[in-house]
Picture 1 (cartoon, rainbow, N blue to C red):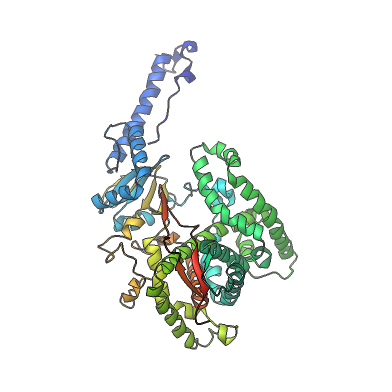
Picture 2 (picture 1 turned 90 degrees about the vertical axis):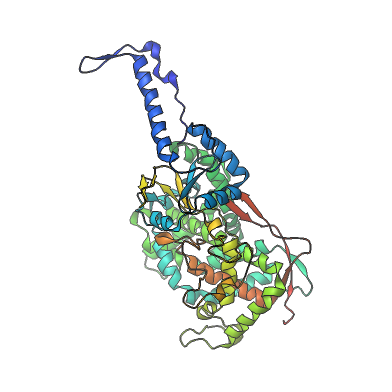
Length: 525
């Protein structure tokens, strides 16, 4: 329970006369103050009793809620991975608590219970994004109506096959510009290359060249994601009525203004053309316009939705792929020959009729062929398993008290999540779980093989349940295509004496972003 300070000055006891109730009973101001104090104590006692049944990691033994959570959060911020491992080890079949500086988290370690809370109604276990304060860091439209989810789940997924040629050409163009054709080993900031490549590819496919080649817009979108983290931490503890004002003093205000200046006029032009019945590009912008409720069919609110989708798609895809490429550069001799051979074998097999690419035979690759790259899929899945971006997955807000089937009750208020980081390193689930085994999933039996787009309580990279990431099918095909073209064209390895690292801050596990690697044209080119 968050500690609330009682300001006794608000009663102005010296100016109160006795309160006369309808029944003629007089209550002194001192009695009123006492009743209020007792009310706060009673609420604390009820909250403490409800939550004390759930074991806590690192809390003080003093039975005062705010002191317990303060002690717990202080310890957790110092050793977040160790706290999660301890909680999972002690309470693997149940639930445990951890404290962050601003709130408590209920960590559901039991996989059956994970399925339970993910199946709860949205008004009980809420998708309300209070963690990143989306209503204030991106826009109210996203918080009020998530119509874009159905658009991404259906229209974007159905467009993948037709988008492959456009994606491939944009990847080649970006590689030409940002990497070139070095004949000797050359230091390349690969994370920057990949993130910019993803931004351009996404914006070309979804919105067209006007945004794909707008460097100011892409740079703003790339930097916005980190600023969202900073801004959400800054405004989270303010009362809601003050958050809209507080966010003005964070970098988000400047990011939003810059994005609006670029994006709103473009969306308005599309809205005007649509209203006049003029021909328009068949893309994500148009699908959003057509799907938006009447109240949100404005340039400003459609722009907010586009920004939100850019933030998620660019960074989740880019950082996942960068993490995998760093791992590939760490062990090039072990993995690159096998991945290249698989790619050559798949490309040498003619695609099924109806799945052909419009490109020339030497450049052909299809969605069907990308799906046949089992070793590459395993490599990407293993990278996501071992190096997720959070210690806690499928996080939700407990909006109403929730009772599990075994009688355990979670009171309203805290966040609830699954400890994906430690689940995905559980030796009872994965053999040698601390080792990176790039082809781990190719050894699973056919029909039971885990793929990167798969979701389960053992593989939480893209979430799980009915709210699993709707864009994961597009993202995985995009990652495979970028990696395939990189392998086809370049040799890569780490600079001697370097290695990627991850910075763990609270629940976030942030991958290396500044490390350069060595690249040159592949010897076969």
